[in-house]
Length: 297
Image (tube, rainbow, N blue to C red; front, side):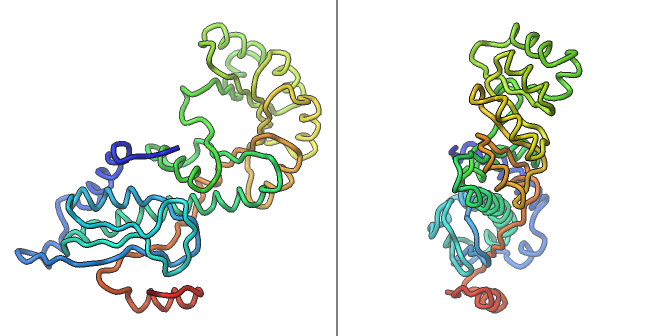
């Protein structure tokens, strides 16, 4: 998945509207007619996978289109404490206006990419494909899914229009597995794949009889999952889902399931610590970087 300025600009604009509102009270009083050009940098104070640099750039460009921005890293890079991501030359007022919004994009998206990479590395000895889910922040799903891809995993469906995904409430409403599949298949276009959540072996067997392409093992334990895999026996793509975390993903991957979808990589993320400083790094940041084993520049 790729993103571009056209895609992210509405999100960046919304972030700046929230941040600036009627103006920058502090910076606006400090900088009046004299608004000197300054140099600064965005850098990290932790270890992780960087993501979101385009959104940081767009944040700067919306305030000062002619600002000079030099990329010192790119999305997907492994970064360490003290690593500079962007060097910026802009008006002093621009730094005041964009600091928090630009950093928030980088910190949050890098947090997703970093956590995703941990999951991917944990199961790299298997053939399983780790994917995200739709769990996260409404309105920001596109960039969250971009961060997941940056971290090395794959995307599940983007929205309700991407495929037929039959869940428990659909089954209840239709009166059963076969009934739900039959009703939807009679109306859906031929290009859609069918995926269905199954909680029992009986549901797995019924779904197979109906010819679904993907069977999700919904909140099954390891024993149930292994039994379900024997029933499927290669006749459908298999997916494990439901409450999966870093301590449970390895044994699940080792069952031989094809896909593991993990909501944790988007809905429960710790940000990667990043800062923006005009001129040199501040002393407290240098101390933090040195304590973490990085080299402040």
